Image (cartoon, rainbow, N blue to C red; front, side, top):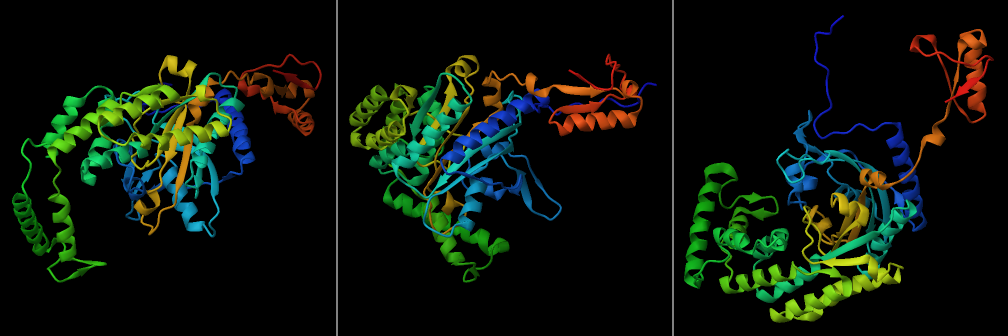
Length: 461
């Protein structure tokens, strides 16, 4: 009989996982949990579904455009989790009772949408992350621990030729302080590191000019004051139309007057265009610095010196590398890339990617990555900052790198009711095999298979 329905296919860019893939994944999870556990990390879980705001507060970048978000029946704006860090931090901070470091590990599915025409359009939209977060310490030693542990995990899975590529948002932010720019301008520059790394200096400059960062003529103090007055007038008109409320009304902890003053100040901030262009050139130059650690650090110092920036700030990154070496990571296993960028903007210090040469030579897909995000707790609405850092593997990518043969552990004894005389006898025989620790199943006639066994016993397949 012909069905009247079309078969329901898998959603685009979603993947099924069969017994062999799941056996490899289970093997990897068990190994990695053991490695992390020996360093004092305990497991935690968070909901797959979270309020969307959790991911918008500080994630920014490309991640916010890749959320699977919707309004749930209770009225909340929610999203499937695209990563674990924000939720793990929220859970941990709520439960913290002391000042000691907290070490957490986790694993589970995450979801990131990508349109077919996007850079990540061919990537799977659901994948499994396994990672760890270290909450509390702010020393470079903590950075070294996380880097070393990320490589130890790969070693435990016998993945060959692994290395770390290290960048440092903190060094970049510190260098930009020398140019006396607004926070808005610095955020713009940091967000465009990836494009500058590709040589897109002119395109970034065009965007900057469009946004008013690099006008040829600087705005005078009188013009800035006039701009601020106009901005205040426009904001006042919007507020008094009833969108927020009339002047004098208290809106939460701040009055409408406070809100107007803050908005107008932000919107009327101006940056010296010459300083902005110098900062842009410095950032473009340092984004090209990459390679083996020692040489790259020296090249970065030269870039900063040419830009009249204190070159000693490179020691921030050098200290992280030294701490990783103390943990046993060979310097040859660490590369530097000051153009390393992230689609998640909450990182404040070192950032890194992990991959193997064999993986890199095929598709340049990283096996994982992470970094330091000391300001995330305040962005999530807390009144204090907790120094925090962590990393996560793409577990599916790790499994693809493994050469694990899982066939031998999946042998099953099939027991034939025909050979045993009855279904009941076959069920008893299969039970005996399972009691002895062997995989066993009854081979019913309606599955179309026949057993070649002569006696009442299982056939090993």
